[in-house]
Image 1 (tube, rainbow, N blue to C red):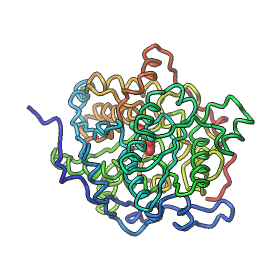
Image 2: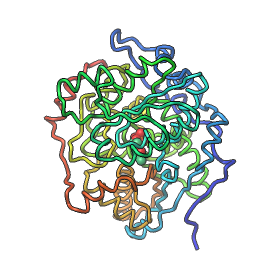
Image 3: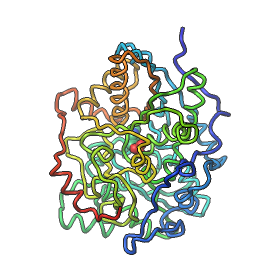
Image 4: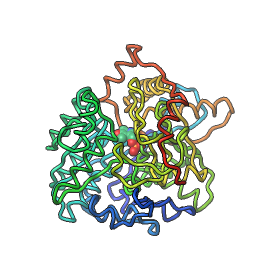
Length: 453
Ligand SMILES: *Cc1c(COP(=O)(O)O)cnc(C)c1O
């Protein structure tokens, strides 16, 4: 019998995160103050973020950053996660490729997000913070942070995009079970929320709006910090435990990945699986392909512009260097697969601009076709987000078959889809369609960007 799962021991949980910025030749561009267009310093972020996190955000010199023992202890609840050889999927595709996936869906909240949530909650607690705020879309980040806040004794307020608050009540229940306060956004509790509701009382919310509300509350509450589940450099940093474990596990499997794939929202799970391997490319010239898989209806890396843009809709954040669709961009309502954020983080954007990674955009129906095929072959129902990575892996495996090649493909299964069955229902009922974002619609939001780069 061939080996299916590659399992590490607790002692193999990484003791340090990998900071790719230290090894990049072209460093990520700095965050800018929107008023002066001058680079901001870590200390400018201290009012909003825990100091340790702000320092990590700006760190371009230390390739390795120690994981505090308290955080590593919490990682032991579910880490190391399995690396799985996808024999079932290989068979279903009749491919010559060898396919592996890192299974981050085994975390207590069902996704990779807890890797950073625990780190962020810990550093806040260390610095005497008592309250934290955040936003959440489908609810995965909110769920992860709720658990992390409880683990380290913090009070948490989550602004949840209104449409998800009503359509996806179970992640809200999870957050409330862990003791978080959950507010549908836009809300009347902030100035930015009130302004949006005054203009458009039926607005169903967006991540950008929810970020504005969470930032505003953090700035106005004593001893309160804001946290973010993706996009920022320190979040990518925390997620590198995924790739660092996978590195050891691929060794156990006696293979090395030719192609590494992650789905792409703001970039955290993609960076987590990819950066430790990209290090081999940067430092040893290893010949690997790294592919970010995003939805056709939110295609920042494939069709966006590399430009400075706000991280949120109201324009409260510093200007971030990102491949972006414009901070006022919102994907079409028909889009059910998550990954709805308008931009990519600074590090990934620089790597993309330097040709160190590729991106593909996947139409909605192909995503759910891939999800269904994977579920039947491997017995795991993937998060619709993760299904973008699966679709890209399938596409590479089929290409390999055509070419008579046998590459090793590694993708990250960022989460399971057991709380996303409403989206599967829509797919199974034939209610989902592909959506082609037109250049005209795209240009409308891109036009609002100030040309700084
Ligand atoms: C949040 C989330 C994503 C997208 O966010 P990234 O920061 O791009 O990883 C992908 N998959 C799952 C399961 C998520 O919860």
